[in-house]
Image 1: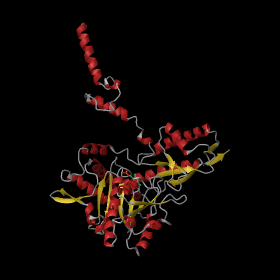
Image 2: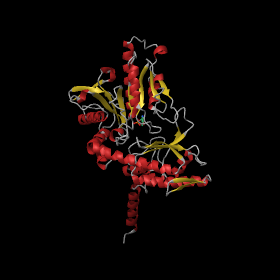
Image 3: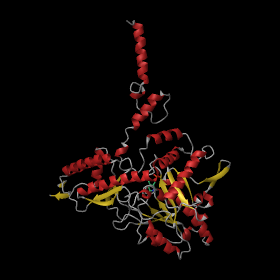
Image 4: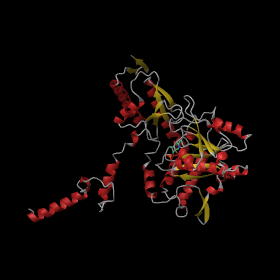
Length: 480
Ligand SMILES: *Cc1c(COP(=O)(O)O)cnc(C)c1O
């Protein structure tokens, strides 16, 4: 038997132990500090669990069908990244192996994009890792701008005279916001080519009307964020070749391939869109989209066949193993973990591994399209036969009383994020829904989604009193 004193001591010990646990902690009974730093420290386990517990209230990654970003990597890659988190990708003398892996990745990507695989490989292109495509686009745009300035001066333009020579950039109206930032930051006129009819891509009949001697470049988008459709960059290249025959200021193409750039090389169904086209001077991609690395990682590659494609003033010399190398990125310090992870993915999966994975992705996307069609109420805008994006609108004659915004809310009740939004300028009367199929969306997740989609549509039809049913056997729509 413990005496009273012993009991009290034990009780105290128990309480102290409990207070050290997450649920028994004083802090669990208080709101988390949000406004100013707390006065006192707390136990690391408690702090970690409080933060994790809070964070897990975010949506589940598997059900986020809106994002392009990687949310799942192999455990080996997780481990690699954890080990390399404390490195700094910008410090090439302290982390020369990370710098080397960055160069290997740039080379592998350049060759995926049609840089010929010949002896002098490292002379044919130049590139860098970035924090994402936004930084890649910014760099691609800046290279176009600086190059234009050099060429404009050489042609005798007074480039200070913004009335006659304000630089402009030509792009379709469904651009990603980074291009608007680029034009605003650097005082470049953005010339938006409106979309034409149901064609959500750069309008080849009109694009050249927007080009003149002050055009720093045309952006081709290999994967339009809004819909997943692609610009016809091959036709654009032909138009540009024709234009350049007589132009004082030949025009160039930068391809924003943020998500297509590491998908299209692995599957069929794409016309040439990359360095196989001679007017394409630079391409960016997000490593954290179909490169299958966690955010944030991007890449940009320039072809190197004339010196002015990436002007000298954009290359900053930094020390590297007793010599100097070019530093091109805008961001300075950031972890090198992502570079190790990208290099891991490249050597781990290889060409055929990426092909296999992306073919699975395409299969899922095509299955979603087939399922959407069975309802007979949707018009499919992008069907997954090129990039693995599903994009649809309600058919004009769909006998339903609900909108795609209602569908978005209804699916959210089941945890799925499927955004609805208007098309870009000119067609913004049309509302679309979009699903991004990522490698982590296995067929089972897709099946699960489709079950909930059916429940959601039935629910909406019930609420709005609409009578559309699907005959699942012969896949025709019966409307009453
Ligand atoms: C995602 C995306 C971007 C921005 O990429 P981040 O890697 O998120 O910075 C730019 N352009 C297009 C076409 C995109 O889809």
